[in-house]
Image (cartoon, rainbow, N blue to C red; front, side, top):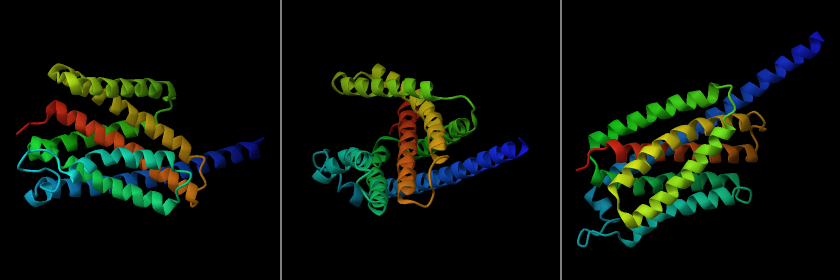
Length: 240
């Protein structure tokens, strides 16, 4: 009986170590992607020459490249998500890095709408909220599966409401969408961290399959953070 208990403790410790190593890799790639996005967004948003590649200053509309940059991130997400099993790890990693750079170009538009100080302060606030909810998701003993399902329903509602508001142009609805969005992506952060922690406990580290799971996990948390940041910016950002 004592031997069995000892083996159980050893197994639990090994599982915890696997999970920690996996999550460390996930957060490392997520932070790397955010760094790339932030640098690209800053340089494009503060360079007239670069931003003119995306926006035609004469008519004030997007250039062809601007439209590509605006909509291509969705294509990247679809390709990586549905092609994960068919794409090799090096290609998946390359797509993730390229995606983070394109996202930076896309997010450079916020520097035209909001002051740099409010963008920076909102980024700090989003980082703090993301960090707290990541800690909650990693340490809580409560199963967040049902909670995550509710958050996913909220996400679907946000997408539908946003599409409707594209035609209504309602400031009130935009405020409500942003407020609900903050709640949803805050909750999704905790849920996704717990989900990835559980996944990490059962992977065989060092394999291509594990590497792919790390990249997709980083993509998941990256999107949680970016959306949380944008929702907070829409609520509290100082417009120019």
